[in-house]
Length: 326
Ligand code: 13P
Ligand code: SF4
Image 1 (cartoon, rainbow, N blue to C red):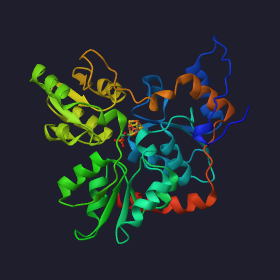
Image 2 (spheres, helix red, strand yellow):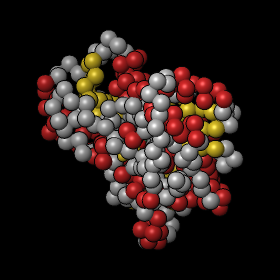
Image 3 (cartoon, protein in one colour):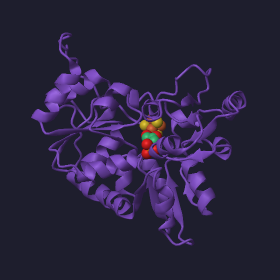
Image 4 (tube, helix red, strand yellow):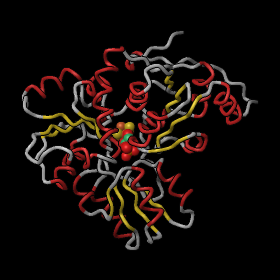
């Protein structure tokens, strides 16, 4: 059985795990033995968040990947995140528990379509949200995340023409607060874009004492009625500091684990299109990673993220530009 980085042809190696072993202990041992670091995004399942060496949003994870001294990076997140870690660490092994952990947003922007698109705007600078493939990054001038997008966009003169991709909701939000008119790619995150304004309004009516906090990948109508908008880290920090005791959280379910850990006395209601008791705003890609797969990938050091050197060199430049500006 062989592993491939071609996400379309990916087949997961099935390995029987001895049911008597303690996965948490084994992962801790492997971490030490291999001088490895586990970086996890907030949308990972709680068990992975709890064993990770570092948990963060896309910006913090890139910063951590840039500065780590570990010899091996285990990226518990989605593929574009692990790719970013590899681009920043071309000589280190970067492993991801499941290579099929993709992203609807990154998938909405295929390289050939993108090349045709940018040809229409030759005098524009390309600002790409980190949720895109390494190929798209290589064609971009600068990368941004939800945590620094405003800062990155504002680093250009007001009259500079910009293309923003691939998230049209985040792009429209930045256009709105910066007074810019960036050309937007028509992509969305399937987890955030699906949230309906009617359901969120209903939640607000049923919970008048709650504050609505939203990720900027949500639709404009939801952002307009939100008390706070920010990246996952910004949302988490807001719930720690704000006096409110109840929050309606318009983003992926995984973040609730950290919110509850930090503020056990507060109530968090996930904004979902289903009923209030349901925590079903799961990102199907993020949730592909499990503790079992984490153990197997660390033990066998597979599947590894491998990128051509030329692509790494090209994609590195706009990522480093973002990190310098952040
Ligand atoms: P941040 O954690 O950077 O806010 O990004 C959210 C997201 O959708 C990641 O895929
Ligand atoms: Fe992609 Fe959305 Fe999942 Fe993030 S939450 S990985 S943007 S599909």
